Image 1 (cartoon, one colour):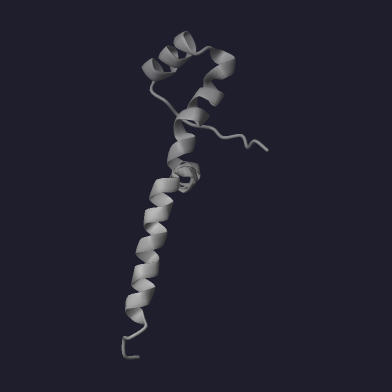
Image 2: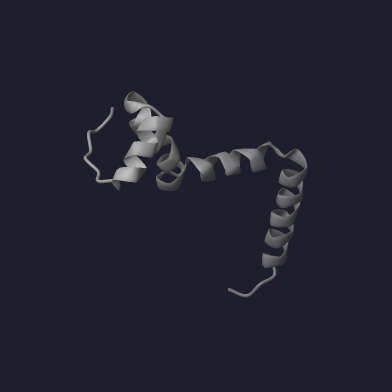
Length: 76
């Protein structure tokens, strides 16, 4: 679902957008620029990429298991 929003831009910025992007494409252009800064998708993509790295995941699992083993003998 899309929401309508009114923004104010400097005239030269608007003219440049209109000239380079086109009148009917300005909203989509701005949305694509802003979206990575206001959504957590970049972080999600980063986690997916890390999880897909089998070597890194094996090393992380070994590290976590070693920490758990160290905690067995700790006083509570």
